[in-house]
Length: 302
Image 1 (cartoon, one colour):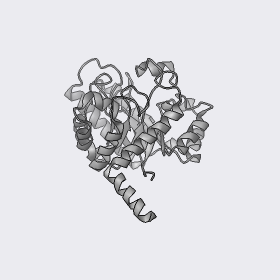
Image 2 (cartoon, helix red, strand yellow):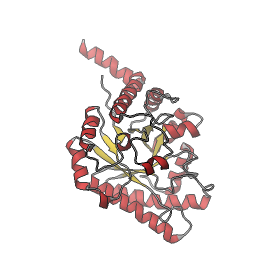
Image 3 (cartoon, one colour):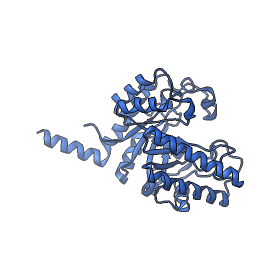
């Protein structure tokens, strides 16, 4: 039996450029493998044919998930008011792009800078960021878009590294609409128990991303991906799932450098995406909901 799961694949699993001439065939492969969504990288809307990209996705029954980021001169956590204002403006640009793409979800790191932290994120910066992102999450909701922020590991931010800290950020935002994005790659570094972290974030968990320890195929690595899928479903998670992997040969050099991807951990993104779907379905099959569905299927077929 095929599980009814809402799964998204990062476009960067396959190709880094939304303008790639091979994009249609990659999207065909994702749709055929059972994916419902594609997570798009941050990009300059003026350099991409947004209506064409939207049509390519829609024609295959795939929905986009857009991405929000901050920059050194545009950061909602900054002390300088003009830098904070520029950060909020940048988030609103990302929101506008999400609307233009036909997305209903905006992922990413809207709360501060991505990259090696220069120090701890203080209480004031945390509060400034949460207030700004909360306001924009409410604006996004009014436009039919869920704003969701990713929890990263300690080497990529000092702001939000754990599910507990993410829940504190949601509380500080004052928004009823801001959602949490957990990623198994980061959780394996920061959390003492991934299942507990999922349960803690469950009231605001909107996106659970599956990534392996080596950033490659979900079927090979130190993280028990099927077990995480099973445990999350048994805890009551009903949100969207994501698949993430990175290989240097697939990414643009600057993207690979920024993500510290120094080697080719796979060379066939389509097969990686298919493998990931098999792994997710295996986890579903061992969950309570999966086992119940299997029993019902056997009963109705007799």
